[in-house]
Image (cartoon, rainbow, N blue to C red; front, side):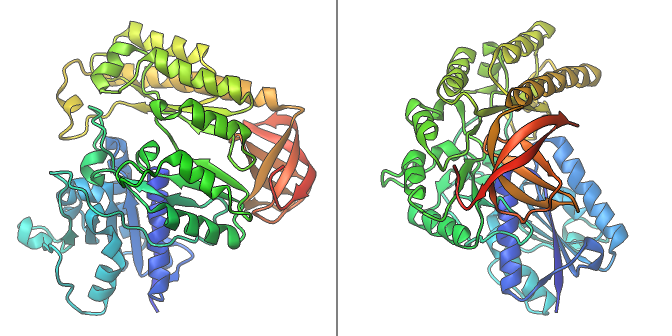
Length: 460
């Protein structure tokens, strides 16, 4: 019986894709290996949002080849969709399966391992396309050059056994036109999972004992627009709250202009919605936002996050920030720092600008020197840590609702609060997927320390 090992890169949507691949492999009687050294098939589910993401994938391919030279290496995901030729050049890769064929990945691999031909897919041998290469990888990729509307493909994902907060991808693709972003090219146009199917899958996860479900997507706030049946994200959330066994719903990320008053009000009043918003910002400077083709101003962004803080005082509010965008001046960098400092944001995800092939930003003049980019990134990350610490300090002495994670030692349990703070509960080892009231006692090594005040099956 063949064994498999999956390595996921990137965003929550990619993590959810990895869960779907795992379920499909299990359905074909593949067994999950304890580590990549023991696997017959190793799947790399890649990201391509930055050059660093591509580099991480290549380094991992080489590591797998060293540690398990007999494994069949399958590279899928966004990097596989964008640049299959680059991956073809790497020894040890047997299959390159883009997002266009990800739903058929297990069928393709299983058929080839059993010695059967798979029909109906574009297949290219590395030795045919790149003369002299030792690689014989088969490539399954169709382009999204027209960004046609392709169906939403999703298998029911009941979560991996070692997860406590499973991701369910309810939306894929993107119709936006940000100048720096490659994702629409590798994911296609926006499409949404049927709300009836979403509710069915969330109910199934809750029935299995998962207390928190994370809804993920590439452009999550656009959920339902492509369906033409009146579906919206807010209507979906209202429907999911009817699931009695479900404890908590969390959104992975949502664009600023889609965080409207109705959504904020719903979260503020809900007993089942995590008090957490991740709202990509990218820059605090209007000129840079325009160059990025972001459809809001810094003032509009400030209004959104201020409204969240006003209506949900304990909410975590996170942001993505890109530093070193072409032409960004030192004054503009300082302006973004000041904007973040004055905002109610509680943490940052900082990215150094990375030119992605085929995007408008890749052709823009005014590239930033690497040493300047590194310094600016460091300054933003330090500010992000300062904001996080300030938020943590506000929680000391408070009682937070948290769910236990599948990470525990002999005398401690790790948990995640509704407002996205890690808590270490010392002196006990508790089962995962329990809702607790935890009193925060202190902060140690950037993690909250707490004691259990109350345990129960539902959010309080």
